[in-house]
Amino acid sequence: MPRADAISTGDFCAATTREARRALAESQLRALGEREDVVRAFVCTDTESARQRIAEPPAGPLGGALIGVKDIISTAEFPTRYGSSDPQALGPRTDAWCVAEARRRGGIVLGKTICTEFAFPIPGPTTNPHDPRRTPGGSSSGSAAAVAAGFVSFALGTQTAASTIRPASYCGITGFKPSYGLLHMEGVQAISTTLDHLGIFARSPRDAWYFTSALVGSNAEIVAARRPRRILFLRLPDAIPQTDGYPERIAVLAASLESAGVAIETRDLPFPLEDFRGLQQELCYWEAARILLGAGAPRVVPELRALLGPYLDVNVARYAEARRRRQAYQAQFENLAADCDAIALPAATGSAPASLMDTGDAAMSRFWTALQVPAVSVPLWRSTEGMPLGLQLLAPLGADRPLLEVAQWLHERREAVVGGRG
Image 1: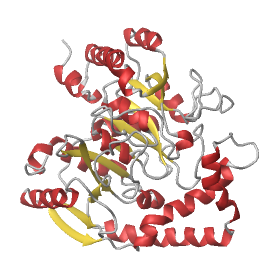
Image 2 (image 1 turned 120 degrees about the vertical axis):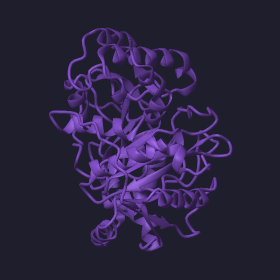
Image 3 (image 1 turned 30 degrees about the vertical axis):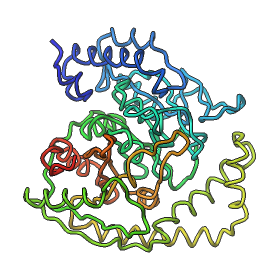
Image 4 (image 1 turned 90 degrees about the vertical axis):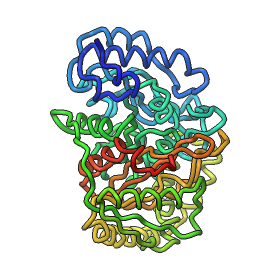
């Protein structure tokens, strides 16, 4: 008999038998049929092909896993439209590296997930699975919603600012942005050459690393939960908005972890507020203007052209100076994180906004994306209105697996560590 927890939690790693994986995938297709007309996570799907693949013996570590793919990631089986309504905005009909590797390891691509137009804040129709009046976040809106609604085990997204961590927090799932360069970006529409990352959505940190390691290695790895020795919490200035009692929740969490034997340190944000809020945008828009407005680039809507156009006139010396500042901050971050297992702060400024036209504030992730370090969102709390809230954990470049081990430990002990503030 299939393990009940594999279906009830949606955790792919809990589906340890062929029968359990098949039962999990079949339950996901049922959920898709029941809820997709409200959630609207997908641009297109092929459920018939998915059912045929589910019936086959699973081959490879991802055998039997249903996967959603963000609409700026190219696929041979489905068209790629970049979240654009322009019929001429069509990508190549080839599998991106990440899609090809997922298929090669047995994964089943269910369909293309909705994203904001060219991954900028121009919302699509996807709703939050916890409340259809609210945004799922952007730009990987459909990927986050597809996992949260129980339609797929994994979804591929991207992050150039906060497009994985923020929607994962809003939707109450795990979002993982690996170290820059860990996952190859071939076949993904470029936005910013030094900021673009693939993002992984899953039901747990354990699942997120299992999928990531399956893409980059010959074997998928199942991480063991590891109690952290020391966590550094960053105290944010009042100029960075925080709602839904985030500061109080963080304080209770820190005290609870300290009682559990974890060494806790709290520091004020050590980076200049101006660059914490604006460095990523300065780098991103300069690079994006040359990618998306250059000769031969896909056609973009006038709003996006107006946003990026002024950056074509920005002197290259100013861009180079921004890159030098980033390099200095990267060294500062390495020193800051040298003696702890993770750096912690909110995954978003609050719960999902009550609007489908507002994908939310990217303030909590922009700077860390610019530094290219690994980040993960762990769902820990619920707002007074029942909406998810996540904790963001950061680690030095290359410390991806140890970070996910700590994240899994928190994930498994959520009820114990939130101190009644869940």
